[in-house]
Length: 554
Image (spheres, rainbow, N blue to C red):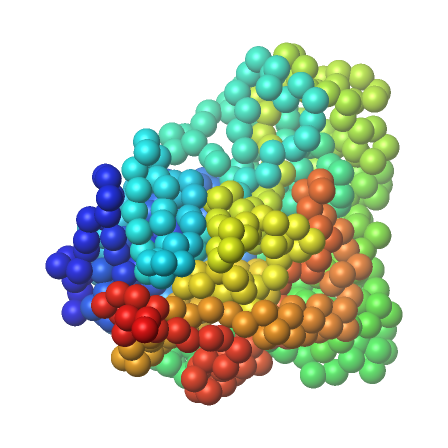
């Protein structure tokens, strides 16, 4: 039963009362909408943007591209969809991924239940009504029995804390909120601040357009060649012939992606064999390099062999030894910050019209009306590009004024770091689900695989509650505490916490340093969630509450 419009009820004042409200119309929100409709529940999606796409709607910067292969970065829930859609490249660019999101929205007629240009300002749990009260722009309101936050892990753009940023006379662009209309950098002096994934993708493209490009780097990043190219008919056909089995296999892996996983320690072979393995994977391209051996995330000594190989490659690609040294990471293990994929990023610094400023040696003091002033002096620019990333995983969630039981604010609950049972529901916030939230594999995985697993778990839960006459589900604090402890324990068995990464919240001043995603792997996590559901949602309390979704409380 789709779009049960009769179930939509008015609330006091302008607004509507629904079974389910979903926040966000990216890949998570679109699939969640599709599954909720199938349950016969009334549903609305509220989306801050003007169209579908989520991350791929906002991140339109030059060179934006997925770092998961196209044949794996797509929905698997509909066989006809995955057989019909054709990708043009091994790693799809932003325009094509956005076109795919639009195709899905049209194919399943999803837009009719999406309110665009609508940002949820506040959501307060109403204990008496067993529902969420939502505040929308312009004083509008809505109510929902269940609230699903499909806001994305990388959707809250992080502005840098640089004095004078608002004084610059020219245009300022952030990679995470790029304009919809094309930006012309021809003949302009452009500064890029930041060399994370978005900077690494944008810099080679901007260098081709601008008259002069200056890159300001604080922390060098390990980047691997993407090895991108046109999608071949043979490669596509191979996947489509065996999509069902390959998708099943991907769900059992650690990353949710099919790679060539090494089964030996990097220290179990001699230096020559290690180098051959690394070189073969470097030549093929993609993040598969990080799976050359099975202990690169566990052993510092093993990790050092991969890191040194990459530094040697950087030294071979960058002609100026000074620039090569600045671009070579040395103070954190490779892979403990999200590994980047690039197309001729390091070679870009061989151009005469590209400069590199090491902010560790020459820090920015201020943005001025003319440009950027560092300790050594001021440079003038026509445009600034801020590739300064995101307030990852929690930023978009905490941007909403969320209040649960007994007036508890989510911002207060998470003041020392996010606490979220299974990455799905924070204790004290009934009927609130987070898709790929902190405490789940999310950003450490092929996020489409993780999105589908979360959406299907939530849809199964909603169906269970409906069928058994329950109106409320709430995470138990003891279960949440145990899960948070497990997430931290597993993380600290690895090298990941050694890096000041956005996984740790280290890119946001004042944000607690807590490893946020679950590193135990997609396969193990999926099995755990399935067991919880099979045991009648163990670790959650189910309540009848009030309303047509369950029996009235006596």
